[in-house]
Amino acid sequence: MLEELKTAEKVVGIKQLRKALDAGNVKKVFIADDADPNLTDPVAERCRQQSVAVVSVPTMKQLGAACSISVGAAVAAIL
Image (cartoon, rainbow, N blue to C red; front, side, top):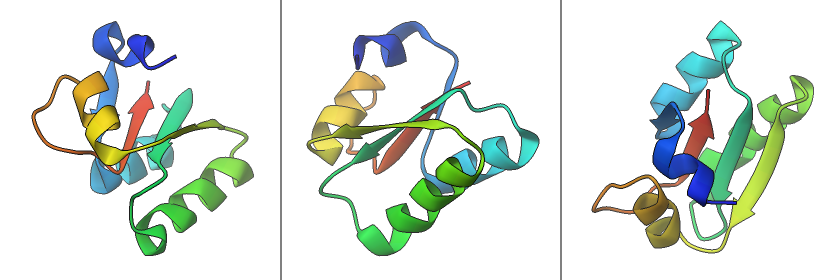
């Protein structure tokens, strides 16, 4: 499932994801299980409210790698 992030149009990070959610452009959200829940829980709740699919990823490192970045990522989304 993470393979989608390599080629899809995407955003990475909480701020960018919030902007995309505000614009209504998000198709699917990926949230790292080891990310700070104080940051990710509000995002997950917003996704539920907007009926956006949420996929759990075991680690921020794995999510960052799937997004082709060299650092971990708490959240990412396919637009």
